[in-house]
Each structure stands twice: as C-alpha cells, then as structure tokens.
Amino acid sequence: MQAFYKSDGDKLVMKTYFCEKEFLYDGTQLKSLYAYMNFKILGDSIFAWIGACNIPFEHMVDGEDIIAGSEIRGDKMLHFIIEKFNIDLYAGVALQRLMASIAVDLLQEMSLEKEMAMRLRREGDDIFFEDKKLSISIASKSQLSTMIHFAVNIVNDGTPVSTLSLGDLRVDPVAFATQLTERVAKESLSITEATQKVRELN
Image (cartoon, rainbow, N blue to C red; front, side):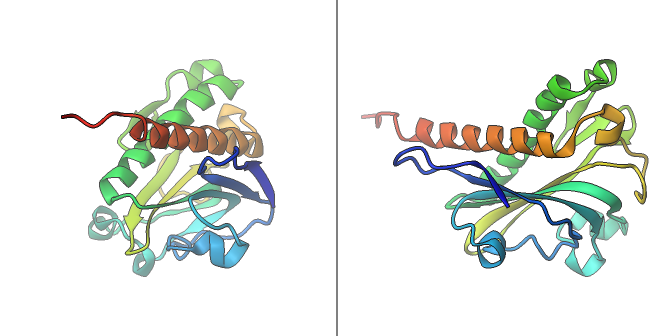
C-alpha cells in the first residue's frame, strides 16, 4: 500500500492510497468504512486498485441499470472508492462529476494519443470517446457517509458495450491513479477551505 497524499499540518485532507494487490470489484466494496475496516484508512479517503469488474444485480445500486438489466463488467479496470463524511448525496454526485472532469483533463495531459485524448468528453459522470465508454461510476449514501465508485477500463476485454481503455490512450494506470487521486484530494480540501472563509451575511 502506498500513500499518495498525506496530512498538511492541521488541515483535514482526503487520504489517498493505492493498493498494489489486484482484486475483483463486485459492488460489495461500495459501503461505509470499507477502507477503514479492510485497510485501516480512517476518515475521508480515495482508495484505488486494479482488478476485474463484475457486478451482479443484487449488488447494483443504480436504478437505471437495474431496470435496464444492464451488465457491468470488464476484465481489467482501475477502480477508485471515495468515502466522504458529513456531505449529502447531492454533494456526492457533484464530487463524482468533478472527479470525471478532472480525469478528462488529466488524460488529455498524460495520453500519448493526443488527438484521441482531446476528443474525450464527459456526459454526466461518464467519459466517452465517440460512442466508446471509458468509465463507469455511481454515488451512494449510507447513514454514515457518502461513497463513490469510479473506474476506467485498462483493457477493452470482457466489456458488454463498446469501450475505450487506458491502453488505447497509452496511459500508465498507476501513474494516472497517483495523479488523479492527488488532484481530487486537493480539490476536496480547497472546496472545504472555501466554505470556511466566507463571512456570514447580516
């Protein structure tokens, strides 16, 4: 396990970790205190790892996917679980979409396939190139915290729809994980600080 971003003095920051062990994402990881109970990462965090994805219907939380009977799977993806306390689901969805936007910016910087990368677009919380889907994402809330799962394809194998991958963009997944988690963590801190420096209106 490697920490990418740590506390800065007394500031409350979002902790970011990359787990070097590969394992399957099946939807059960999207629950409060997953990073703490399994990896001793306490508090607001972004936990990242590489692994396959296969989410059975009983573990899906997106009503649209359930109604459509969608399959959500892929042979190798880069996964992120964000857990943030003391925010509502609306703020969680906003953070989810902010992460997708930051991911697009970062991919355009890092990709060795510049022409392709510059044509990436965000639609809601998803990233596309033409009709090819690069990412999946969902936000959910429990009584304890708000959680986000965000993942991008490393390869296109095993996906039920037309996809784009980090391999197509020639982006190293670990380097991308490092930069994305750090940028999202810093943005989260900046947003928190912005809420703490505004004077109350009379």
